[in-house]
Amino acid sequence: MGHSRRDFIMMAGAATGALAGSRVRADEDKRPVLGLIFPPAKRGVPEEGLEMYGSQIRFVTTGLGLKTMTPDGYDAVIDKIGPAASELAGEGAQAVVLMGTSLSFYKGAAFNDMLTRTIKEASGLPAVTMSTGIIEGLRAVGAHRIAAATAYNDEVNGRLRAFLEESGFEVVRVQGLGLEKVEDVDGVTQPQLIDFGVKVFEAAEGADSILVSCGGLRTLEILAPLEERCKVPAVSSMPHALWAGARLLGLSGRAPGFGSLLSRG
Image 1 (cartoon, rainbow, N blue to C red):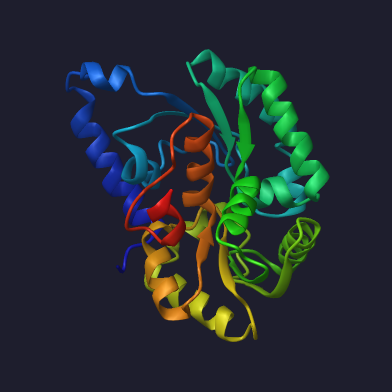
Image 2: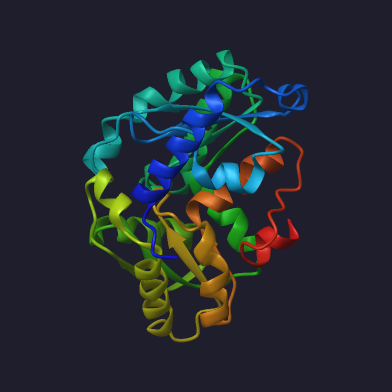
């Protein structure tokens, strides 16, 4: 499990290219369509989405051009979210997910709700943000006292703490990798992330759950190992945003083998 997200993106690109010339099966045409708005400008269908729901959901994507995971970086792309949602509706999406956890939590819970309304109004479709996805995931596993391991700097971590507390959770500890450039997230390997998550959890006395926050981190395969090592439920950005999106389409969201919540749907 020594792969970084950059490795997975390269492998997924090769697989996509191999399939591009193949004939689309009739059953694929019938799959519901989930639209994903990504912070980076060029981000294709997420590898986690294909692994979790590739046989059940067809994905369409667009990007905002985010450069840095900082408040100034987020401010620069917020006005692009409505047009991006409208674009996805035009491509056949039946529900929309705003990816990028910090992009939606950085100004608090009311702002996250406003972004959701903006997407719904621009697209005419059901919508959810990645931040709402992690909140729904944490509530579904019965979390109360959270240890949060993130990719962020201290300022963004403080905003995550405030958002989680607004949402009714006690944040025992939040610690980040200090990353700001979007592309730097791709280099974090899964063993590094598991060890970091365990370190943060062990320093959070009395935590009953662990959150790994940042949609750019490849976290699907680390959920079960984290739960095994920490003995508490684990929730993370990309998988649980996709779970929330699948549920908007009327699916269970179940993806067995990837942690306790996804295994039960």
